[in-house]
Image (cartoon, rainbow, N blue to C red; front, side, top):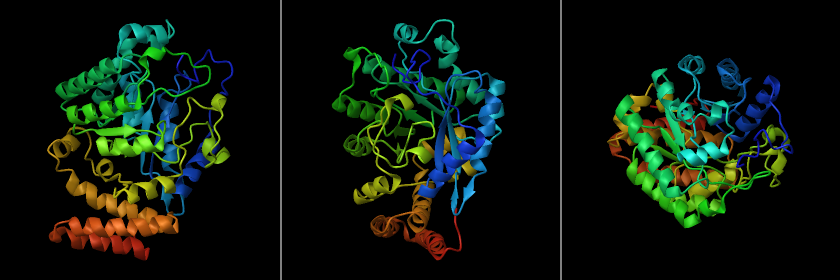
Amino acid sequence: AYCGFRSTNASAVRRTLDRQELVHQVEALEDKGHKRLVLVYGEHPDYDAGFIADSVRTVYGVKRGHGEIRRVNINAAPMDEAGYRTVKAAGIGTWQIFQETYHHATYASLHPAGTRKADYRWRLSGLGRAMRAGCDDVGLGVLFGLHDWRFEVLGLIAHATYLRDCYRCGPHTISFPRLRPASGMEVDPRWQVRDEEMLRIIAILRLAVPYTGLILTAREPAELRRQAIAMGVSQIDAGSRIEIGGYTECGDAQVQVAEREQFQLGDLRSLDEVIADLLAQGEVPSFCTGCYRLGRTGEHFMEYAVPGFIRKFCTPNALTTLQEYLCDYASAPTKALGQGVIALELAKMPKRNQGAVRKRLEAIRAGTARDLYV
């Protein structure tokens, strides 16, 4: 009983957004400056491949001012290969499937017998089917706090190794969410993961799977996320709301209602606050989607990522997407911080590369161009 949206939780507020409600959510995200998002789907017969593909197309179709979503990632139940192909045709980025726990007995005790999710092997093999169907960017994850974290880390690494060996491509991302309070939650306190253990998990994963993106979400408090970036986390979210309809109905409010959420968030800062915090630490926030749109995905992406060559694309694209955000959405203090970081990063580049990047930045500042990437 770890999920606030589980079928047996009578107090949960259940809802599916219709098309217009989805459009309003995307508009609210675009108005803040978001360029990429993950769509999360429950385990329900109505959320089939056609439904997911239609919602992805709807998201891509929403344009508002300079706002647009350039990459839609998916977190959904495993499908057969035909289902993956249907969704892939809508233009998705990464397909995430979280195993929840790699421990067989724990998995069986937490998921109702006779349901599709109770089938451990079907879920475990889901990303392999996705890759065979052409979804070559996939994301692993477990929910830390259901079983011994050491076992789960070994499971993640073994799963990543299996994908690399079988499909010549390891996971594009690994997520490691930690249990948070949820409506009616009942879990074994023995497996709670302390902050220092969480940082250790991140360090181990970064060393074991150096090429993959490590995602730490707003489940975690701001201070832990700051520390985690120094340990190797490369992707975070910001301004997230996990109430259904939360981006229009809750906005940046600091109040959470357990019955409307799958779990409780630990970091409710707005996108602008998170961007400013990263800039103050000397980090370069990136909204880049260039690799995905230029076909640098799957095995092709790994050819650049594993030896580290990907940085020759990452830094220029990070700077141009950051410049877009600063021009179109940032508060004045954030904009000032950002321009300083961009200047510092430009100075670090080889002189032969500075000119082209500088021209793209100037075009964005002048308002004559957007969405420039290499």
